[in-house]
Structure formats: C-alpha cells, structure tokens
Image 1 (tube, helix red, strand yellow):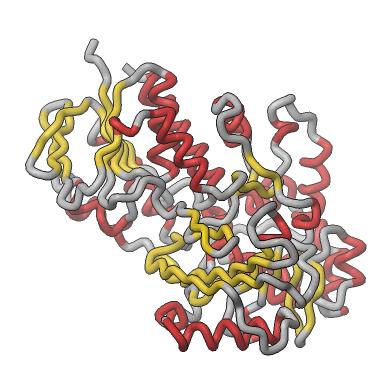
Image 2 (image 1 turned 45 degrees about the vertical axis):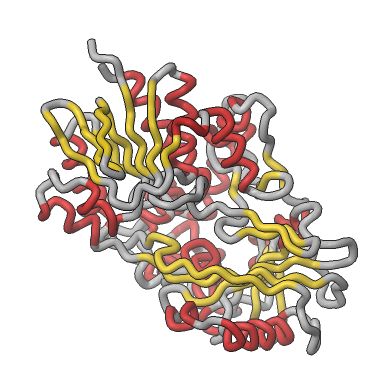
Length: 452
C-alpha cells in the first residue's frame, strides 16, 4: 500500500481547509500557490482605524460541515456572528429603501410587490411543478410568484450573491435548495414550512444560517489555518507550475524543480486548468473552461463621523430594474465590531457584474465620483467626502451557474474517473460561498483518506 502524499494547487480557503483535514488524517501534503499571498481572494486590510476586506466580506453557517470545521479548529479561530440586525435586508425601490419581507404576511403588505402578484402568492402552493431542469431562475420565479417578485426580491438577491442575471442562472445548479423545494414538495412556501418541521440532528440544529466573519477580519482565519498546517508546507510564487501524470502518480513541476505525489487537488479557476494539467485531452476541458465569471469591483468606503441612514441591516440591494450604478451596499460596521472608528461607518459596495461589466473597469477619480454620487442618493449622507476609499477589481470574481453547468459537472467527473487520484475543486463546482468551499474541501480530504 503506497504512502499517500497530496499536491494541492492553490492556497485559497479551499486549499487551506483541504490541507487542514489531510493533516488531521495524518496524510502528507504540499500547497503550491502562484502568488505570494496565502488566502486566495481573502485579504483583510487596516487603514486609519478601518478594517476592510478586499475579497469576501462574510460567510454563512449554511451546512454542518462549516459548523464542524469551526469546532475542529478547537477554539483557535471562532466565527464572529453578525449583529442581529443583519437578518434584515433592504431593497431599493423608487428612491427609497424597504425591508425585504421574510414571511407571507410581510409579502402581502410590502410595497415592493404588485397587488396582482400578492394575490398570486396565495396560490403558489397549488401550482404545478416545473418539468424543465434547465429552466432559468427568472422563468421559475415569474411562473410561480410573478414578475414583481422577480424584480424586487430574487433579482437583487442574485445580484448580491452572484452579481448575475436571473435570466442566465439555473436554480438546479446555482440554488439547488430552492429548486428542490418545488421538485420535492411542489411549492416554495409549502416546502419551506414542511422542511422547518422536520426533525433535525443536534449538529443540524447548529446550522443557523447566521452571517459570520472573524474578529478583526477574515484573513485571521487563513492565518490560523496556515499556523496549523505549517507555513513550511506552502510554496509560494509558483508562476510556471504544471502537473505531469506518470503511471499512477503525479509529478509537479515548479520553479525548475519537481516533486512526486500520489494525489493532486486543484482549487484554481477554470482558465488555468488546461495549462496546469496538459496530460488531459484538450476536448475534455471544453465544458469546463467555457465557464463564465462576473467581473466586479469591490469598494470599501469609510466615514469617521457617520451622519447617514441608520446601519441597522445587513445592507441594501439594488434591483437591476432601478438602473443604478452599484449592485448594493453592505453595512459592515453595523454587522461586525471594530470595523470603523467610534461614531464612524464602514460600507462596502460593488459595481459591474454580468449586466454592467464595463463599470468594473472604472478606476481612480471616475470610480470615486460614481460611488460618491450613488451613496449620496441611496445612503442619505449628502455631499460628504469619505475618509477611506479603497477598491479592488476582480476580473473573474464569481462563477456563474447556468444551463451549461451539467455538462461541466459531467466533464469534471469524467476527468477524475480517467485520472484516479486527481480532484478538481474550487468554485467550478459545488457552489460559490465560503460554506460551499469548506464542505467541498472536507469532502475531498476525507475521500483521499478513505480510498486506498
């Protein structure tokens, strides 16, 4: 029986968590990272009393694997749960913010939805199941709930998560829990009620779906993982890395060196896969490398003295129909402690996305004026100069799960079956959120540990 040794390509959250669980299983590994930064897109910055993120701002306690992961850290890095007010989401309509309703009564009384669609809501539990597995999110929502629910609930929700277009997103792949409510129970409303009544295990009861970060920023999580798995097990600056398959093993070529492994785990984006694994037949990659990504610029804006609207919500989302130039605003200092000086505020906003990608190309004063004008209108701050303005452009920020996802997932499974010991992870499959990445990483590590 061969002694296992695993190469992990990419030092983002997926790679680090995979290494964490491999180390717990006593399996040797090495992480290879193209850049000189550990943590992938997770990067916390501090300036003038503000603590802001250049990548993800938070995660969700959305599955048992994420809950167990923090327990497995043994108290070395605990999640900071967002303020209770973060349960409220605001939606922009006709120049005002309105809370997104969370129940049937709120859905009937809110000004966000039309009277016609409110009446349609009462009939939602009695509508037929959809028969097209590749039905887009926009068609699904209009069919079951009506156009105004799409425009002022689902569309801003998708902008907030995917920076995407509901006319492209397919729920079966992008929102499987929503898709399964209709397929298994015949109704969003009825299915949600029935699932809430189902008996849960003690671990499932800990899946609160609360928003979390880490005290002093998410980078503390990647730093903790680095401390646990050992900095000596991470090789940075591997610009020209590629993998060769030799018999049953994998040889990693990096910086004029080579090292052999029994397994290889990739966590990188679809655009780098073909060059990374040249031994895989070119046509096998086609359904994978065609994956679309949203281009997004993330902007952190800080005010040492805040005189705008109360920051008593997770943030505000702006429907595409409202034709504004930002996708939404996160109220970071309202959610988490010590993100801004006392009496101040830290906001994070986003521009670009699948339907306005050109805005993500704006820089400098042009971007500053756009953001400042948008916040004057939406956040009630008047013509006030911010004390912090920092931005990061992510050209391949968020993978889009459309109708081509099934072909991509099948191609990944085929490649893995043809090249035993090879694992293709990252946001190309299994979802885009932090909880998705943690779950995927643990699954890959446990599979490596289990299979001889």
